[in-house]
Length: 460
Ligand SMILES: Cc1cc2nc3c(=O)[nH]c(=O)nc-3n(C[C@H](O)[C@H](O)[C@H](O)COP(=O)(O)OP(=O)(O)OC[C@H]3O[C@@H](n4cnc5c(N)ncnc54)[C@H](O)[C@@H]3O)c2cc1C
Image (cartoon, rainbow, N blue to C red; front, side, top):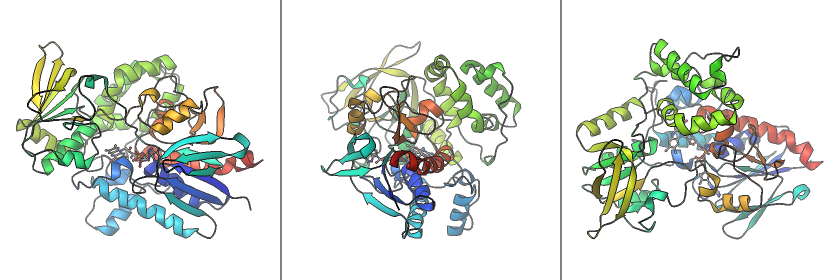
């Protein structure tokens, strides 16, 4: 029997769950290789060692399997019978769950499929069309594949524009907020500036304060908006609205926002109104004109994100307490100037709207601006090489790569490549919602199914 060789680049949730579904099916014999330089199954979100870093979705919403909505909750309850479906559990614990799921699939069908983990970074891919693909690794080796899946997750950007007067190598600037060694060099009394006020900044406030940090923390972003909070007892399965008729809100980003506002004001809690459109968001987005998508991304995305991707209640309480005590100060303004100071500090000038610019001296600056979706600004040799080879192109919105909702990638000539797929945040421009487990679990299952169906096409 012909064996389908699949290389999955990236072994976070998306890569691990795509491998899981490929290894669980019985139609096509697969040789699955996951290329991942870090621990398998964790990715950025679940590799944290900080117990206080909680999931931002309650246990009842975090099943990794679409067909078994309570799968994660049951797993958690087995480990600790006091766990409730509405609890927000540690992210570290969720990582263990994904790892156990994948290893069960690897051993279950070992006589039919094979599985390999390659602890390297992929740096390039060559497409020899009918002869398949070659994935080049950072150690100089290459892997042959019939199909390659890019499961690269949230990719960071290179040097930000606001850092023009400071070298990236300045030891008081932390470009990668997930670099624990760098974060641990911050002394408890140091003053810290977080650039960004989203979930990454929230993570850093929690991490620092849980380690006994007492120094002042400033957090600045253009809008100065923090993610909103979940209800103390979240609605696990919120009622969903239907997409029917050709109502005006379906073709206009602004009208859709008004519609969600109306749903939020009519619901018992605004959270229920926002959550009630979750099942139709991807379809609504798919039907939206390019101009409307661009408008949404430019003007509405920030507001949508802070309401949609919320903080666990206990995290929100901690953030509020830190703000109330005066340790945390949120500023809504852009960075005008940031440079090194003679006393080994960083001098930063922030321009808040309608106010005079303010200058602060801080010991550390942490970049919490989140993922970079503009292809040219992403700091990834693999993505740069794929772009150079013409194998990937930016989406028309400028966010992520040009591909179909299924994940099949379009090259720079606009041709779909049946051997090259993406999953996860790179599909944001096509799906809008493509970053969290509730969406990614279905994507991984569908992608595995599609890959198996491709076997006849690509081996013909
Ligand atoms: C801090 C944080 C907290 C979050 N919390 C939640 C939550 O509570 N609930 C929720 O539903 N979602 C949460 N999310 C969203 C999260 O992104 C998804 O849940 C999910 O983890 C994304 O998985 P992924 O595999 O697509 O990306 P990632 O988890 O980022 O994994 C991508 C993997 O690709 C690897 N990689 C990248 N480039 C290469 C390369 N060239 N070669 C080889 N490997 C490569 C990376 O090492 C990484 O392990 C959170 C995200 C973050 C960043």
